[in-house]
Length: 209
Image 1: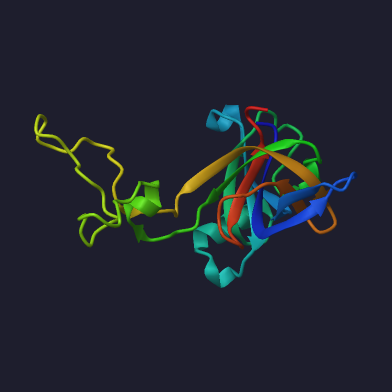
Image 2: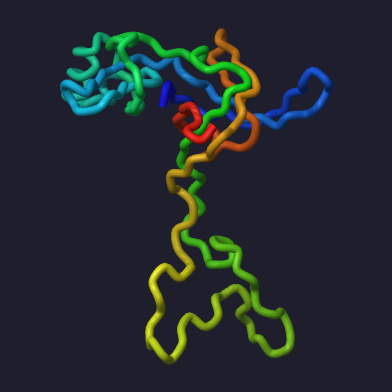
């Protein structure tokens, strides 16, 4: 990984390219992120940068967190994220990482927490087929059918069942960066991004590009 940044999802819109094609994009407020900690192979066994995003009040921080930010020489922040990078020699603690580290035309991977949908059935959660509506199937149509057979006399692990749907970390790979607005700290990415409006996302250069 060469670079990364923390952002906040603003929502989706559409923009037009040079020949008039409509491109659906997700707008993300990416950075500016302050470098709160620098980890090296000599001291920690690997190279990484800990980035801090979005100012926060001191009363919302613990003493340990305030000491951490004071040591770095930055104001208290709400979100911290560590990015393992190949080369961090040119970056120091207290530096600011902005959205202009990315450029239009690049491919990025974006990680976020999906919308939580609560406890749902297997039809909504996994897309199972429902039972027939008529011909004696009874009043139940959106429940799973037979769950096991006589031979093992049990249900196998990892069977798709009702349960918690959403509210999990998801990474979308190889999203195209359509536009960068350095003045407003905005990055427009083609397609959808995990999470609700206002959710925190982590952007890094694509590992499979």
